[in-house]
Each structure stands twice: as structure tokens, then as C-alpha cells.
Length: 194
Image (cartoon, rainbow, N blue to C red; front, side, top):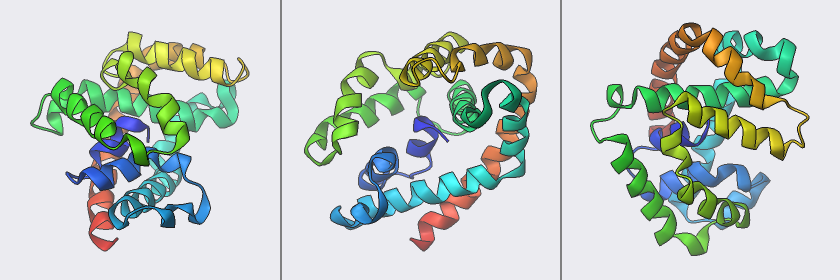
């Protein structure tokens, strides 16, 4: 899953949310250098990623993209699934998406000093361009995919994946909905175990 899903699946603890959000920037056992609740968020992130990668519905979505994007298919599906979460936000959360995201950006600002370097570099762009809110539109997802393609030095051709999103929109959305209910239950259970 991508940023929005990781934030949402963290529950309502700011430290768990931070850890889940920036976990990709914390390798190996370096998570032990953080406070307990942030560690919990990092471990939750890793569990969510493992569960997602192994889920048959996600594999169905990635298979649709594999011929054109190879090993980047999983990254693309993560981004597409965040689109469907943002688009259907009120099915999952009572707080409007814009307010939810503003609250999260404030958590980032308030905890800047403990963020990993990678997150500190990313944060100003994320907030200025409001990446999380942009996920709700196909145009926003197109921009994100184009930025990701640039980060891969145009090797991934991810910018073109918006074509598959548009062509198979209903299929991807149905797969997201089926998978996300499983992931939500899994994450709630995992969070209670950590």
C-alpha cells in the first residue's frame, strides 16, 4: 500500500502513524532507535507490506500490469489502490479527507525533529503539492505516476500506467474494495498484537 493507506491503517495514535508513514526510510533493526509506539508503526508497516504482496487479489491487479511494467507493477498497484481509498474515503472514515490530511500534515510538522532524513526531504514537496489529496483524482494519480517515472530515470514507464487505470478502472476498483476490507481487518488485528 502507499502513503494514504498506511496512515489510515495506523489507527488514531500519532506516533504509530508516524512510524507507519516513514517506515520505508528505516532499514533493518534501526527501528529500535525510535520510541516504542513509533517502533510499533514501523513493524505494522512491514506487516502490511508483506500481507499486501502475498494477497491473491493484489496479485490479480499486478498481473494485469506486469507485461508492461515488470517489477514496478506492485508499486503502481499501491498507488492505484491509494486512489480508490481517497476517492471512496467517506466509505472508510467519517472525517472529510481534506481535514484528515491537514491533521496528518500537522503531525508531521510537530514531529519534524524525529523524522528520518528521507522523510524530511520529501515532506515539503508532499505538503506543498498536497500529494495525499491529489490521489482522489485520476489527474492527481497521473501526476504521481509521472513523478515516480522520473525517479526511476524513465526506466519504469509508470507514467503510462494511467492508461491501464482508465481502461480497467472498474476491475481495479472492485479488487481494491475486496482487498481493503481484508487488509483493514488484518491491520487491526496486527496492531492489537504489536
